[in-house]
Image (cartoon, rainbow, N blue to C red):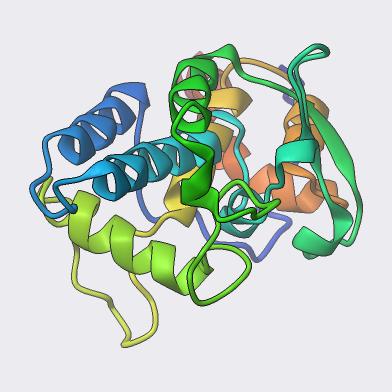
Length: 218
């Protein structure tokens, strides 16, 4: 890890909360055990959908918007890549990510449901109201069917700002990655066009923090 870097040259705030892989596994399990879904094929399909979305956002460190707008053709299982389209992110740049193999079981389970459930949609997560599941709709699902049942819900500090949100899945993975590899690799995975956006995670980098501790105590 390169220690010759400024931690405080950005105005970005620290992530509100950090979840780990065990927390995400609990989220997947709470959906599996939920009684809030229809007791039929549609309900089981929606369960599989919601579990896959959570796993995708976390394991691929995607923006929720990027995950929700994925199309079937964006996945290349032969090359094990996912295409993130430029129109689905704020920097308007396309990127190619290697598939995290941890998502494959949930992906296979989901796409093996009968094809009529997609009603011919080219999107992986279609909606009856729109072409794809909206960010607002998934925010509601995530809050009511995952965060609240797990006791993780925190009252918003302002009416429009929740401390527990789907975007925290991306923040959490970014924090995990910054503790494993270099900042530029993490920036490329996250799709940041400015390294200053990635530097916010250095605040939570264990090696960086221990280096400062050792210097202060030496």
